[in-house]
Image (cartoon, rainbow, N blue to C red; front, side, top):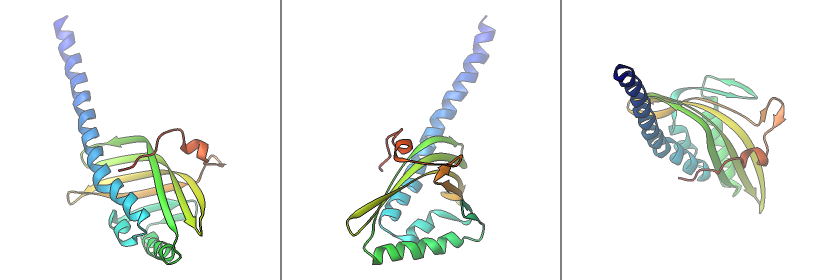
Length: 168
């Protein structure tokens, strides 16, 4: 009987250690990727936002696939134009699932972007799938996919409000 429990105990112990390690890595990712991402986006700082991405990124949106980092130039243009027009942006998001090991993390979640211009706020809701890789000892976004619809149905405030958004 003891011979049965030792392997079972070892198996579950290794799972528990892996989960703790993943949670610690995710906390590190939160502080080195997601907190700066949220801050840069809300500060309309395109250069800081782009610095969170790897040199080579696969970016996918409903408009198509970008493997040439065209989106980085668009980030600079869009955020500069927002700053010049005195637009305010608030980014909220939460994770639906996160799968992480020592050098890769696959993260899925939902976002809400509040865009305030001339005292009027509009909201955009969506889902994201992000792959992060540890490159030169730094976590970087290497794949970024997002959409505002799932199965042809627009993502709404009701979808977003299923979980509490994160603030760092």
